[in-house]
Length: 313
Image 1 (cartoon, rainbow, N blue to C red):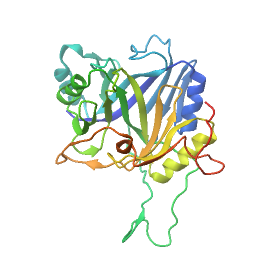
Image 2 (image 1 turned 120 degrees about the vertical axis):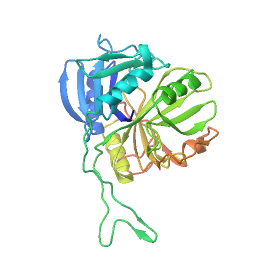
Image 3 (image 1 turned 60 degrees about the vertical axis):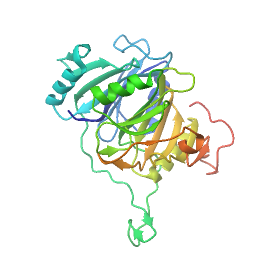
Image 4 (image 1 turned 45 degrees about the vertical axis):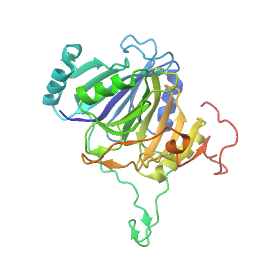
């Protein structure tokens, strides 16, 4: 079986109008709306769905308030669905009408699997002129972005109070690979041996709880991280932390408070791994989270660190 990545996510929200504005400002395309429901898409067709918190079609929540209610993972083929059905056993339910296999993970999160709806897109980041390797070339100016247009939902991060059980579920039942660990505290997982550093991160805090930490959206390059972050500040949304850089995955990031639940992240330039990669153990610390980071973001007027709290949007 082969899980390709996140194909669709669904939020249950308290303020549908604010969430609609947020995801439009974030750079997603609105493809459908009706009442408190709105559906968005990234450049490659990855879907982000918003539903009012009282919508009866939503799966149960793992925490109170606005949060992520379902993650749909894409696979290559119907054969992959059948392999997953056997691996997941009697707890899995196949919905013939929608071609999806449904199950709940040990954290209480609703999962589904379907043949991917995402499409290949011709999107490339701007190469860097590193010392001795002018990747961009001669007499070529780099790109500047007025805003971001996310390519896809790249990964999700959850708090859990049953880390070991949850890791076994994703590795043994779904075939995920471990990339790196905070022993006893967190695990970075990727769908396949060959791919980006992680599609999911599971974190068990000192006072264990269940909930969403953030949803991460992949963008082309570091310049789009900056352009997207400055635009989202300009729109009045509040940066939690960023820009910054993660030492574990090498990725550049910018985290923003999301009215649909927890945080949303722009990120790019994560490490690419294959089956020969050996997971590493880290002690959780501020230095391991970020090589460098700006608290509160960059003010879009002064282009310096934001001094005061931003409006909620």
